[in-house]
Every structure is written in C-alpha cells, then in structure tokens.
Length: 343
Ligand SMILES: [Zn+2]
Image (cartoon, rainbow, N blue to C red; front, top):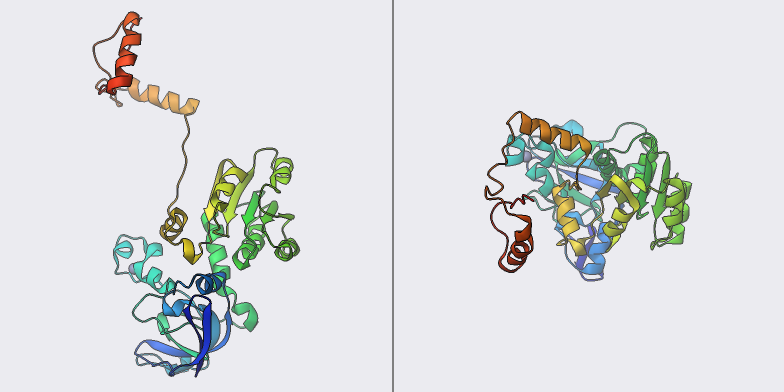
C-alpha cells in the first residue's frame, strides 16, 4: 500500500510500504482523512525525524480488522486517533496523577512500543485499540479530522481558566490558535485579539470571532491600551511557540494575569518553553507583599508560631559602626544572620 513517509530534511516521499501487521490488542484502520499539522511541517522543514507514528497523527478512518481479544463488532466503526485512558500503573498514575500518565505521554509522542510503524499519511495504519475513539452520529468526516487539534485547544482553554468577561490575546493563528479563539468565546471571553504575521490568517481569525488581529511587533499595543484599560490582557495564549513569543506574551498580559504556552515546534524541543509545555509546569510569579501578608506575619509572631530570633545576630551594632560594617560585608560577603542596628 502507499504511504507518505518523512525521509529527512525537506524530504517526504510517497512510497510503497508493507500492509500494517495486526497484533493482539490493535486494530487496522483505513484512513479517510488525515490533517497536516504545524508539527508535521516543522518536522519536514527541520529534518528532525519524529517518532514514526507521529508524522500524520491527526486522522479519522474506519476499522477494517481487529486483533485478538477485540470484538468483531468494531469492524466498520468510524473512529479517530486519540489518547488512551490513564494506565493506572505508572508512577504518576499510582500517585493519583492520572492526567500525567507516562503511557499516555509516550503514546502522544508516538514513542510507545505499540506505535504504528508510520503515521496516517497512508491508506491504512495499525493502532493500539486503547487509542481509538468512536465517532458519534452526525459528525462531518472532515470536521472529525480536526478533533485532535480541537482537543489540544480545549485543553489549553481548561488550563487557562479563561472565563466570562475576560480579555484574551492569542499569539499565532494556525489551526490551534484559531480553535483557541473560538473556544475562548465559548468560554465567555468578552474581547479576543490575535497576532499572526500572515494577513490571510489575520482575516480568517477575525471571521472566526476575534475582534481584531495584528502583525507581530507591537502593533497590538494601542488596542490593548484602549481595550484593556491600560492594564493588558487577562490571559495570553502562545499558540505559535515562536522565538520571542513568550516574552511578548509576558508584556501583553496584565499584572496578575496568566500566560499559557501551547505550541512548541519540534526544533525548539530543548528550549525552556518546550520543557515547560511538556511537563505542564505552572510558574507563578510573586512580587513583594500585601498589607494582608504583613498582618498574617504579625499574628504569627504574636502567637509565637513564627520564630525569627535565630535569623538575626544578638549583638546589635551602633550607628557609627554602620559604614564600616557595610564596607566589610561588601568586601568579605555577608555574615550568617541579619545584623540589626540600634541607633
Ligand atoms: Zn499511567
């Protein structure tokens, strides 16, 4: 049968490959549609070969054969490729962190032992039965081919906590960015703007519900100033993964707002952003303190629950000693424990 395989940098070829081999617990799916995602193009451009099953991972098709242990009635069912339920056995699962299941993550990146030998730019593929999701009635087959990127976008919306009345900025109006704009509206965002270098994408994102779209490089600043009351956006999604996008996002978000990193192209896989995204780590900044914090501290001290007496030195210094002590600290490093001055 025929399949398009990535062979190297800027090199994808239609080749004749053996029919996929059925193994226990898997099914053979005849592909009806497979979407070309940004990550596929990235892999093509960079030449960094992804795991085989990963090139062409957005697909919809019909089960044509079932492996041992699976019921025959599955044959003929329309299905999409999805992620399995958490395995229940890996370390995160056993710690109750099923949403961070190692097996699920391996399957997402196409690196698990049961992964197909190639992706879905092919006539047929073998899929682990745990990964298939049956299509409900009434879904257009072309629409269904977008269910994987739509699920990525919904996950980002969930993670962001976007809600009623929020001002949202979406960097990158590729498939994921467009879906994030639509879903941010569904979630109740009052104002949504997008940033993308391509004019055609800016037009499309406005058709899909963005109030405005801008080219990168500060073009959005005036709109943000007016619409965000000079504060900035409540939530900024970086769906581009491009160099500098995260830094731009941090300048566009208001104080106390949230930045959600969604898109990460393969060539930046070693970057800090990629590590953040892969591990779904939340970084929260903390600056200074509030009056409430001061009152909490004083209460804890008064109740003798916060003990600070060993953090300062008992020997107090006089005012006249201050210049000399500071000079000494500058040259020889600071003493262990805070020095207190008694004027
Ligand atoms: Zn697990």
